[in-house]
Image 1 (cartoon, rainbow, N blue to C red):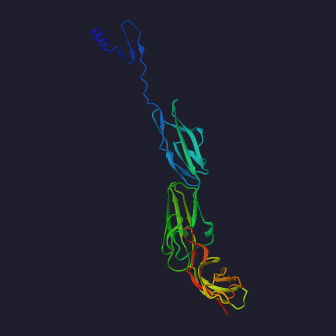
Image 2 (image 1 turned 180 degrees about the vertical axis):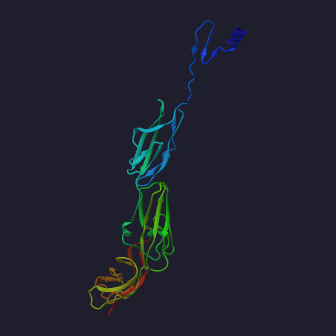
Image 3 (image 1 turned 90 degrees about the vertical axis):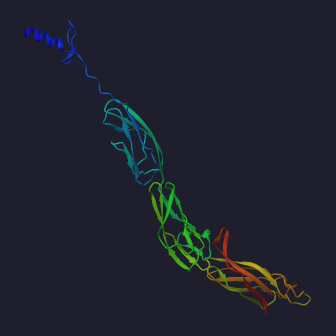
Length: 332
C-alpha cells in the first residue's frame, strides 16, 4: 500500500516541479526567470525661454521617461549661457552674466546603458538700462503750452520685450500723461519744477527706474516799444523786455507798416522797411534797425510787428515763439 501511494504522488506532479522540468527517462533542467520589461529611455523639456543678464533665469525642468531609474544629466556638447547650471534633478537655472545665443545638447543617461539627447538653445538679452535724454541731464525745460513734442525725457536699451511703464511717484506735470519714457498732452498749470519716478519692467523680470526733473517755464511773451533815432545816417538801437522761454532768443519780423520818410522831393509814404535784427537772453532783446538809403529816405519811420523765438520745441518741428507786438521807428 505504501508503494502505491508514492507512485500516485509522483504521477500527480506537473512536468515542472521545484524549478526543474522532467521528461520521462531524462535529467531535470533549470528554467531561468523572465527579465523585467522596460520602455525606451526618452528625455524632454519645456521650451527654453529668453533670459536677461543679471535677472534670475526662471527654472526649466527637464524630464525623463522609460529606461531604468535613476537618471543622470550632463551637457554633452555646446554650453549653457554663462551663469546657468544643469542640476542633478535636470533643472536649468541660475543668473545669466553674458548676452548672446547659446546652443547645446543635454545627455540623459539611465542606470543601465541607455542614453537620450535633448537639444536646446537659450537666448540671453542684455540688461535693461535707462538713461535721461541729453537735454534732460539736469532738467527737462519746457514752456507752458508745449504739446507732446517736448515731453520726451528718457531712453532705454536692453531688456526683453514687451515692456511695462509704471508711475512710481508723482505727480506728472498738469495736462500730461505717461506714455513710455515721454509725456503726452499739453503742459498747463503753474510754472516751477517737479520730479517723478517711472519704473520699466520687462518680460524677463528685469526692472529699472528713471527720475526726470521737469522745469516748466512761462511761455515766451515780448513787450513792445519804440526805437528813436536823432541823427541822419546812424542806425537805431533799442532794448525790449521779454518774459518766459528758455535760453537765447532771436528776433522774428512778422510785418512792417511804413510811414512818412521825410526829406525834400521824396514820396511821403509808404517808407520801405529798413533792415532789422536782434537777439537776446535773460529777458532782454537787443534790437538794431539799419537805415534805408539816406539820400532817398533820410528819415524813415513806421511800425514793425515783431516776435521772438527760442530753441525749445512747442510742437513737431516748431520752436516756441511769442505773439507779435508793435515796435515803432521814429525820428526826433
